[in-house]
Length: 130
Image (cartoon, rainbow, N blue to C red; front, side, top):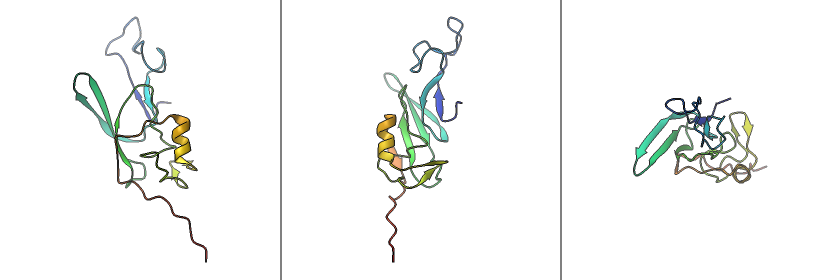
């Protein structure tokens, strides 16, 4: 139920609830953002406000690692998008999801692209027939 999601909770109960009243998916839902594959752990940067950076190691092991700036209520695409909305996973499989059009998935899910995508997999080229 909570796979691929970042949860946001109060540090102590407020009005009998651990879930903040202003959570993006409602005051009965701890989910803050979704669409995240495995992570190497969140990092926090402090400026005038708290920024949450989320570092993702792609499930493909060698491609499309991500650095994300987390925004409440946003979808980061997994398992229908890896890295940028650039179509480089069209015709491939992420987890058990077959990607037909990463660009369409990005538009339909209103995906928040990463700040940086590292080691992007090459776009599949059509197979030549002889």
